[in-house]
Length: 185
Image 1 (cartoon, helix red, strand yellow):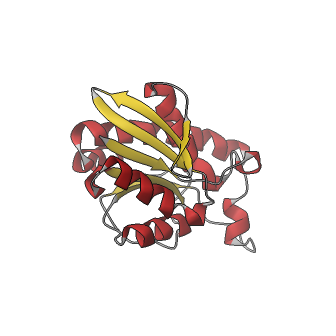
Image 2: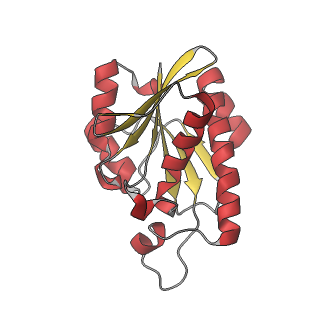
């Protein structure tokens, strides 16, 4: 069994924002492979999916971004999953809009959601897929920028990136992190 966690902020106010691309990727995977409606559990929403016979849990923590760790930790523990079975999907200001970067482990890179997950897990040795949302324009506060919506042209790029990210996760489930990195980074 695998656990894919899409990071974002709950509520309509945050739908379509840069910070919520992780939620969008999990929604795309649920659309493709979901086995029913989302259930509330582990301080979030979880959908069970099946991909080529592999059971995959799709989690959207409903704590705000910087408090996602508890939801992830409780889900891993309940299902007795190993860190190798975890992939976290999030936005990244250090990548151009739409660029994907898949890694088997690493630091939070200043991302508060990843930092909180690492605190709760006691390690940063878990896979993550970052989706580029670009740098804030001159004079913009970083927090305001990630909570803003994409412009029209950027939205087209992000929609394409969400599809490619879901493809990358399917490859991760089927063939592992190295193959997925080679194909999608």
